[in-house]
Image 1 (cartoon, each protein chain N blue to C red):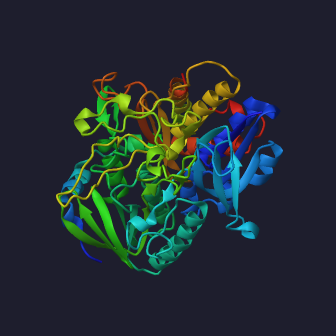
Image 2: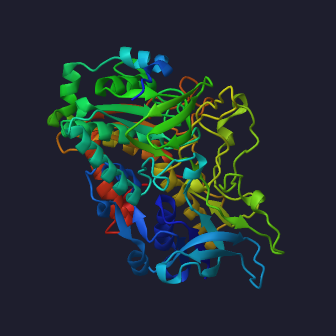
Image 3: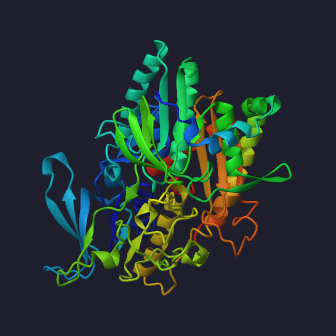
Length: 485
Length: 56
């Protein structure tokens, strides 16, 4: 009997756990360690954050599901990994600290034969002074509870607008190295949609403040679509939407400090500014889980297993250097640790070799470049790929590891621009591959047939359909495994 | 409230001259029948991308 230990129960971890148990069956153990007691369909947090969906609709408890699926579940935070064993353990093991109320802080040591690290992001609000719900100046939609709180603040702001006050709403990224610009884009247009619905749009200024050097970059270097016989860019396409909806934009911005009602930011030209606001939803940058690694003798080998930001090193080329030298081959294929062949990372937990967008630095040396997104569809696909490799190894099949590089993988992104069965809207985008491969696709870096974008009500229906389907899948209901990642 | 438009005139100028959708396009984006058709189109496109993206 083999033991597969999965750290994290987000999109990647939960996908890995369900598929692993489905394929491995009763003969092998699947163990999940996650600090969260509930699973969260994060894409719908946007709707929670504007009061269009209840928090409960995007969450469900993990423990009963894992009990039903015979998956061992520990609600705790993995703090250290010992890939060579030691301290009386013959096998590798992980130390996890309980996050349950009744056992909070107690540690447990869990041995494994294979480890899949899906710890996701640590929301690094501390990177910008005064950023985030704890500091109290800005809100976030990164978790369901953050989104719920964001809506409470939003409703108060809308009430002020209703009483005739002119307010400024700012949505965007709270640091120069943030990722998930798509989420900020969605929140901007959902907020704008709600302001119009409430009849207070005339009393509201809406700003999009982003670390993207240009609109439509989305952390993937933008996209080129073919529409009605012409090639158009995601830049032009999004600028059109900003004009249509009356949203103002500040690009290439790094927030250096947030004070009550004031955002201090620096732009790519090195200039510094202050932006006053009444309501601000700013996303934090991500870092990896604060997990340490030790060898058999107890020597700290964290820097050999993880990169300085805490993401796990895998089979990527981390020495590509300058942008001119970047190639598609830099990106990982199997997501296997180069140091320990029974350790893998999936989703945000793996260390990317570099950004996807062109790296930029201000004259003051401030890095203002989106980090590469690897959430959602890529996260799920990578998790399943890794599971298939681990299953082969457990079953003793002498086959090469499965491969899913982000340079061969596409992504579908439905960015909501307002909710409503007949009044809703969303930008439906597909790109293939996520990371441009200029050798395979010299014109635009991507397959022109697989890269597209359109705006309309159908996109909103699609996003709602995905909400239903992915919750069905995450709850492991009938034929869940037929729904692709 | 401070005025910030002058901080980043480039992007504001670009947005100001970005192409606007025509009335016909805006109507089509909300028309249930057109959008049902587009829903099928989006699904097909997404399925193609999904099929091309899974492990090898």
